[in-house]
Length: 321
Image (cartoon, rainbow, N blue to C red; front, side):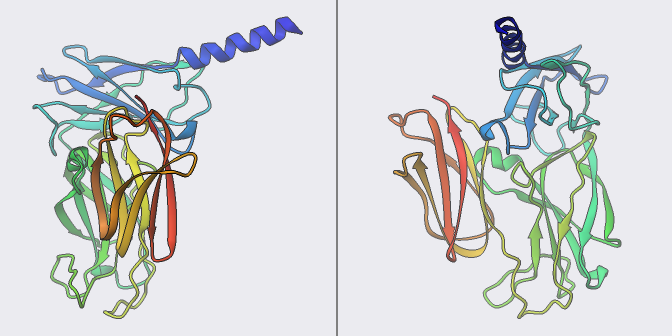
């Protein structure tokens, strides 16, 4: 019996302490810039940790991402970004592994090759029962989120089918908004007296998805209104997320709202308030902010608590110090 327990323990420790994902970045033939490889999972397991990275340099562009938390039985995604300057920008080569998600076997997996390109496409389904000619999708550059700023609009597209495809989008991390173009001007309109109905694409990474070479996750959104008018209620958007998670210096906090007055506070696991990040601020869409914990704050698990309109949502985050 003791021998069996020892064997099981060795198997578990081998899985925990030797997890690795390896492969190559399939870069354009003349590339001389380094690539940044990111591995992440659904952020709903492993205590919400799950962002791992490595560099891959020319000419082979081989990489290995190793971490104790890369273990079997969890879904992982692999993304690569080419650093064509001091920081990547929209249109820098990027892409995802075509067969995401992947699962490790025996604590490791090899041959995860990631193609990158300067352009890509998205596809998906819009759930909406009204006239299709009024539906539009906005494509937003996600790189500003790395600096604690909201994503910026890159392009807007009329949708001719509820099952849609948008081609030739500059590569990189993106956010997406679908809306009803009620006045037909091709732009999203929001004023004190009139706002067009909209919804943001939301997924496990805060509404972000990678566009470029390889596989692109379907971008599905729901517009649950049939007859759109100025008196329609707005879709309820409310939540908070953190990127990366865990973090060891500063974190980008994403707050989602649809015109509510919101508060955002950080609490420790004993229920003590650590810091107030937002106090009675109206949040409309996605707001990003950088949080640099104070030097005397201990590492550990904390809770982001966002409140507004009588609703409270929390997100656990891990501060590595």
